Length: 261
Image (cartoon, rainbow, N blue to C red; front, top):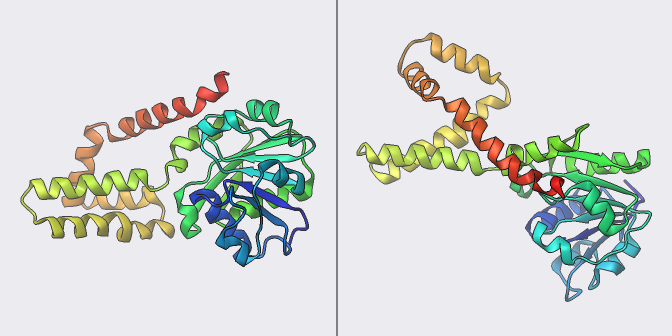
């Protein structure tokens, strides 16, 4: 349990709220060391042990580490002085340098969790700019482990690329599931059966990947030279991997826009 005080600006939103709840449930912090700002100063999280304030600067003053769980477009109007503090930014497209200049933070951690924080299954890469204490670095890692797995990366640019990969959360699986169901319906399969079959592939069957190597699965199925092999080969011949690469490139390009300022 950490004795450092953690403040979450946006801690009653979807992302910040999920992190706040996980921190409380897993007792990462000692009682009263989680501070959340809310315009009304009231929220159900207070009943679980969080300390609520109505002013963002008040939150910063009470905290050693401050999380910005806000939309990037709201950052320009965020007026806080975090001198001497560590700020953790969950915003895509806002560089550590920009965050440091605007907040006067001693150090800035850029992190990119995804929507799976709600089920504590997010993968969260993070990068630190500036010097932080060993205890604070440990707190950052354990903080994101409360909502899944986390890893520190050595280059800030990795965060922008991973924003388009792991940061998308369920978006790519959702797109695949929708495409499979739509194609099945186009082939005459009833909608309910098509949806169930697609969900089985994306949600259920993919759980095998948790304990088996992905490439080994592909190689084994291709070696059978059956139905699955024909489907996989058709996707390969249609440059499926190159299309994924272009998608990640375009997403990362959007995330990097903040680094150009």
